[in-house]
Image 1 (cartoon, rainbow, N blue to C red):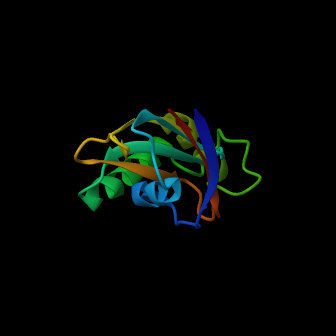
Image 2 (image 1 turned 60 degrees about the horizontal axis):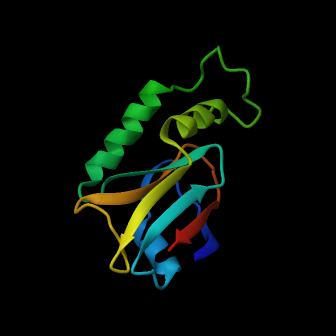
Length: 136
């Protein structure tokens, strides 16, 4: 059986934000076993899985990705929406637009220190939409 919902996240500032609990709240009841696929419907934000305990990890992620893909580079021609436009697209492709997470015993089968991040790369990204698909 496949179930699917689309959710809208509130606007978040540029950076890496834990959204695991928000997603779990939206899913209501999960099957005993299955897979959750999460797709972010945007090309200037990403979704990833990483450390959920120490907030400095999210700060370091943000520092590293901004150093890896800096703004205001003369090589970028796609700047219609500002200096963060093309760098946001590149960062999104580097980290990815989807995740698949096992479901075991009606819960997401994440490691002890794993959490789902929204990676917001725009200064004013606005609401972000996620498609949550449960395969059971």
